[in-house]
Length: 186
Length: 176
Image (cartoon, rainbow over all chains, first blue to last red):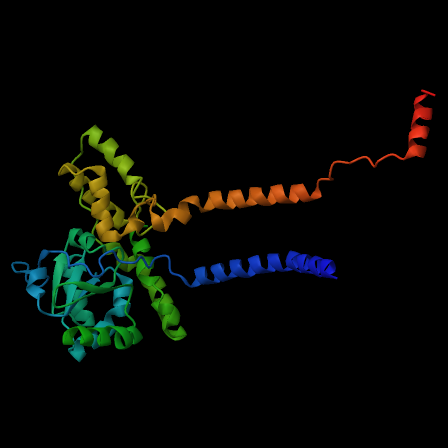
């Protein structure tokens, strides 16, 4: 009796095991499909914002440094007039600027200042200030690998959040604004 | 090449997947219209003066150990992307300021994370990555051994002879 039971169990396993392996494989692959290989976790979360001094886009005789922003919660948005996704994101930034919850600083990445300025005239300027990173060296310090990228920096000058790719309206309302309000209270 | 890869970087992130299909479609048509023309305006990495052959050889090797973050399956040495050019310049500047290879790697790792290293480091998190294949191999070998053992016929033990058999055997062998 118990011998046939064992036999049945062994036979059952022989059929079940491939099925189990198959299900596990499908599980992994399914998960893989919804992962974005380009979303590289930032090495800079909870690290101090890299020190930089860059000329202002609209007045290159003046500069802005990371230290100038200390004591404020602020957003750094990496953009370029050559960047299609930035253009797609732009209305969302304009809306965010209109809310007035946070100053947005633009890092104009490897752009021609003339192109950048006319782009802002054409599509609106959500930036409190834009700084020019003509050679892209500051962008490297920020670990930038594709525009647009957005960093949330807290009052102490720590990077709290980074997003690569355009910010959607949902993301602005559900993630960014609450996060900024939270950091402002802290 | 340089700039179209940049475009796809911007376009890729998963925020879209959760967005509305219409937005998505708008974006695709928009992007495909503009991708070629609009992005070619990104400024190129400025030319650098030629370097000493020793340094060039050293950097060439180092660049094969670093990943281009735009064309993800290429190393810095082989990638034509704009960012790769900038990173090569950065690596060269660091090398010229006297930094060692491992210091340069640390410098980039602090900015771009482990991902920038083309060959993952060996640590607790990457143990499975490094040794997983050997584990699988060992598992396969174990299965082969077990299955083999089960199907191989057990060595025949001759049944004990009784009187009759013994008589017959001696007859056949002819030692009457």
